[in-house]
Amino acid sequence: MPLSAPIAIPPELAGSLSAARFVAVLTGAGVSAESGVATFRDAQTGLWARFDPRELATPSAFERNPRLVWDWYAWRRKLVAAAQPNPGHYALAAWERVARQFLLITQNVDGLHQRAGSVKLVELHGNIGRVKCSREGTLVSRWDEGGGEVPRCPNCGALLRPDVVWFEEMLPASALAQAEAAASHCDILLVVGTAAEVYPAAALPQRAHDAGALVVEINPHPTPLSASADYILRGPSGAVLPALVAGLRG
Ligand code: OAD
Image (cartoon, rainbow, N blue to C red; front, side, top):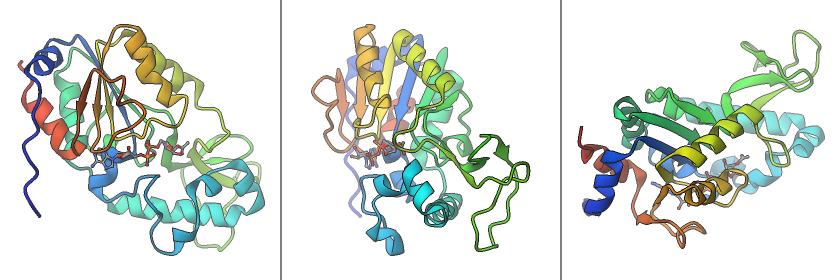
């Protein structure tokens, strides 16, 4: 495995990062890629290869075949539980501890940011580790996986479902409001490991730019954001983020 070339951080960017009063970060599935968690745009592996996430992560799919959707999330929950945070997750948790003001806005549902120690965090799309009643929306702490049926709410008997945002569903209002406020007031927005294609999350970089923040894209590949970002660091977040944190002057 060739050593990845050292990441070149423009000196003026390093200076801005150290001087920033409020650092906001928007992450996507790419930040978990080096933990072995497949991104949304990667083909699903194994027996799920024939399913397209956009076909499974929808209210109508759950309505049509709750068992299939429940099993897909149970499979992903096991994968995520077996994964470990990578240096990119840990770098963001360390940055939070030294920044004057910091908010991590994630589209990811894998909980790896929290496991790496991030606390100042907003989950725009929920968390696969949480399960809720599909009727009441209340979280359920325990459920019986083994019964062969989709487990039901102990209170009202409705089917349980993962506490994640599906396509066509609204994002949690408070999470989105916090994310939009951060984008409007931060000095710097790092956009890490996201294809920047799914809204409203994908609108945050433009909101930050319009409010005068520096927008930095961290992604090995180009995205629709690349043309407008102030800086592009073309590399894996597991290498770029630790390099940025190492360069922060106290
Ligand atoms: P995608 O799978 O669409 O995009 C992953 C991005 O990560 C791509 O731009 C890759 O180039 C980049 N990437 C891959 N490896 C990387 C690495 N090592 N370091 C940094 N970047 C890397 O995932 P998202 O953009 O997060 O929504 O998808 C956004 C939303 O679309 C998801 O939250 C989900 C999905 O539908 C819902 O489930 C509602």
